[in-house]
Amino acid sequence: MTIPPDPKRVLIFDTTLRDGEQSPGISLNTAEKLEIAQQLSRLGVDVIEAGFPITSRGDFEAVQEIARNVEGPIVTGLARTHAEDIDAAYQAVRDAERPRIHTFVSTSDIHITHQLQTTREDVEGQARAAVAHARGYLDDVEFSPMDATRADVEFTARVCRIAIEEGATTVNIPDTVGYTMPHEYAAYLRRLYELVPELRDVVLSVHCHDDLGLAVANSFAGVLAGARQVECAVNGIGERAGNASLEEIAMLLHTRQPDVGLHTGIVTTEIARTSRLVSRLTGYPVQPNKAVVGRNAFAHESGIHQDGVLKERTTYEIMDARTVGLEANAIVLGKHSGRHALQQALEDLGFPVSGQALNQAFRRFKEIADRKKQVTAMDLEALVTDELRDDLGAYSLEWFDVEASSRRPPHATVGITTPDGEERTGSFTGDGPVDAIFRAINAAAEADARLREFRVDAVTGGQDALGEVSVVTETGGWTASGQGVSTDILEAAGRAYVRALSTARRRARLDAERAEAQLAQAP
Ligand code: KIV
Ligand code: ZN
Image 1 (tube, rainbow, N blue to C red):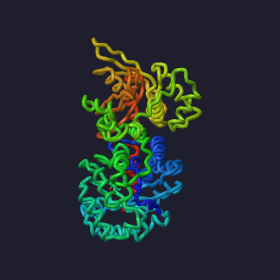
Image 2 (cartoon, rainbow, N blue to C red):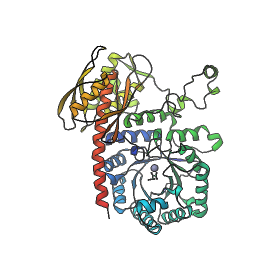
Image 3 (cartoon, rainbow, N blue to C red):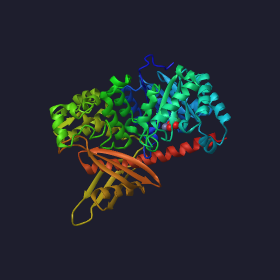
Image 4 (cartoon, rainbow, N blue to C red):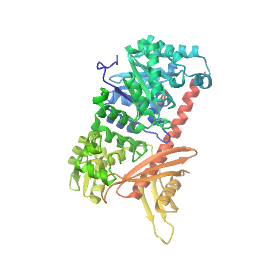
């Protein structure tokens, strides 16, 4: 059973790797997903939804890797009510310390009529069969009536009762399209409790999307109405406008704990680092004014505020930046530090590296330490995450030359390695040096990607800070994101761009696999 013994404890179900990965332009490889899952475990989440195993071999393998290697949280995989989905989810999570299957079917008439093209009776039957099938494998089964907030509450209640009769241990009520309002959602959950008193014997969960900017408020209303699991994603990423943001809900419950009386198992000091890792690996920058983790979340601009904070922090701050791990940026290494010191520093940061990976990290560290006097924890974190992205089967930037002048258009030549290991060069004259590099990469890769977004950030403060470039490209209607880090902005830009090309390629392959999987299951 997954019911927490403490009635005041709210379980955090993280869906960064499943719903979060459904954001446009994101496509994580298995190593990246594993890295995020290890960090989620350090963050103290209770459940990791690692993916949707039936959808592709890549999704399946990533869920299986996480199930086999990540200790602590429950690991779950998503499944429709089809027996093949549940079989795949079980095979993917079965090796976890604590495996869970999460199955779902829509209960709204709009979905039943137009998408599923079936009847309410059939949905009841699907829910019954799916939960029973999943319980045949595991004791921990979650059921979600999708689009519940736009569904008839009495019908949703009937389906939830069936799921509980068949042994579901968690019942999750999704606001799939981000339509509900806090008071309405709370009333819906209270009505469900009235109609299905058995809901008190299982964990009631909330899953809210942010289409109207209400995901966290709705989740909170759900918790106040009795839910004890919140489904959320780091930095609020997810389908369309995203899911409820993990850091916001965790810090809300933490900061207002004396008034609300509920708590989570989140290690708040790991929040900032988790947010940075997810942002780098997904290529989704965090908006500067984002609550809790935005660059400006603890910045004070007006003179009156600055004066107040200097006199007493609490005059204008309801949270201490240190509580979310934002000021843990000690200087760890300098240019004379050796391989062993680097290995130790990386281990302290939660990146155990050895062998070839250590050599590679050391080479990058030396390049950076030569140009930058002091290498901080945040620099190392950026560097290691950047290295992690260079996987096999991806494009990599080997070298580049740029000629820039105010009198002639800039010209770039690049050398890249293709996913098949082929070395190629490309040249182009662009509107600016960055544009020239991107077009030269397109020429070398024979790609027709177009730049949609370009952004430069500094990893830390100071003139010698590492630069971090994020790009979003579009190829044939598909968006893909990439990020690169270097002391040289042009190099960071080139790295970001080849990663976006790799993401686009991986997405195209996954989409083809997913389409094939769907065809295979068509009745
Ligand atoms: O938004 C949603 O309804 C979902 C379900 C699969 C839980 O993501
Ligand atoms: Zn969702």
